Amino acid sequence: MKLIPKSKDSIALVLVTIIALGMFISGLCNILDYIIVKILLFVGFGSLLIIAIVYAVKNNIKKNRLEDISQDDSL
Image (tube, rainbow, N blue to C red; front, side, top):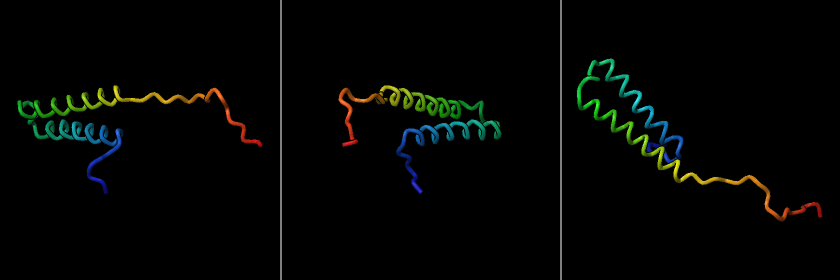
């Protein structure tokens, strides 16, 4: 089992899961009004947003068009 995710999808899923569980558990324990919990949740959301922006900027567009000279493999 890999503890550190390496793909873009798994990093985003882990961060969203941590934020969602943090909000759910702090809501159950009635500690959502504490300033430190709010700061931690906003920092988690901010880091998720920054990572999403970085991956969006780095995204390479792949062209699915044929090249100008097509190869004929029938010979």
